[in-house]
Image (cartoon, rainbow, N blue to C red; front, top):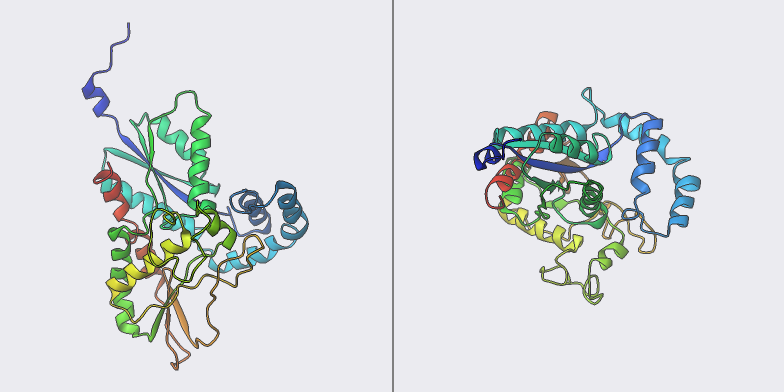
Length: 332
């Protein structure tokens, strides 16, 4: 007869931490980029149109042409170690593992591409962890990013006969450990550069998806001040969370007055995959980018030195390292 596990045996097991990231192609080749885009854009949370329309757009408009152009762009940022997103996510997972210690096992998985979420779950469950804390690495909530990664994790767990104890950490746009760290990293660069304005750039979403996050349908994008504060109605609003993050980082940086945070390109409300207004003004003469912050200086020299790759890599680790404290302390 097998011995009954004692409390001491149970507490000797490790806890699991799963970091969720969006994804990246396996290589910058056109073939791998096409495979990645097909997976990414087939997600109904990303391209939220009827399935026949999505299939038609993918196979007649997007996949025959876009992979080649996107592959050229990927080759420009690809490093000797591989995809920048994969390199920095692995560095983050290693740092979180070091900070949490031997009582935890940290894995990461990509919503699209590899290493997959399924593989990360397999490794955690094979290690017989007591439970799994899931942290989507998206500061602001969007159904097409953190929502999709969370839903995929739930689907994979639901297919198992023995479902482990799992908890999900929410978005962290208002976590002091997040925006304070961003301000600490950006502060010295801002002091050196002395910009006239700071432009915060966020990934765009269709207006339709922002409105879908409003359960009443009467708040989001109805008035100009709908994102000035977050309450029960817009607590899942990506746009409002971007505004809140901007206000918090700007306050910590002691920056010049903050304008409306622009998104990555011009909006077309009725079309899928296009972001929210406003766009970056063409009047800005010079820009340099670092970790999602873009510093604008008008009437300045056209030559601006970019932060080093080492600085960007340091941010990729230090800017997220608060996750270790979050996983093992206040929300443990």
